[in-house]
Length: 118
Image 1 (cartoon, rainbow, N blue to C red):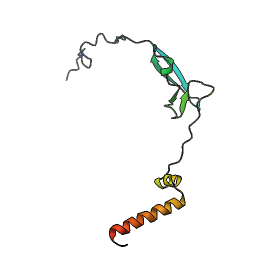
Image 2: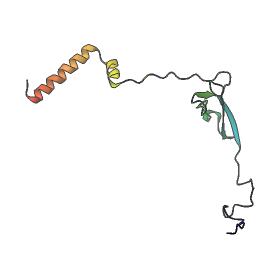
Image 3: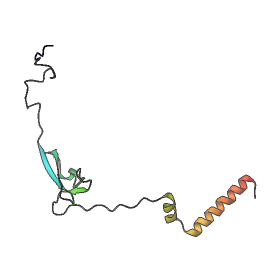
Image 4: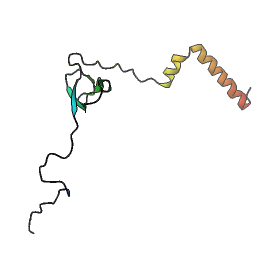
């Protein structure tokens, strides 16, 4: 089996000369550095004409998952996460023990009336 060289094998039609670096227009952009609490730097690029208020002050660091801010000396602190609460815990926040007893008695009374037990 002959191993001949086909010059266009594996290239796109119209791709241009091999090694050509200019494949289109590159828009102006600015780089913004963000730092997390561990000192990891993440660079994000934004369009040069974007207003400053549209560039986020805090991002999630892809290195650590921590929040990262623009100020290297004062990176944002980790937000305190609350533990998972059950449905019962939320109900207990809204109702007192006496209200719960009254609601339970009312529900049992209605159930017994529907069943004809009262």
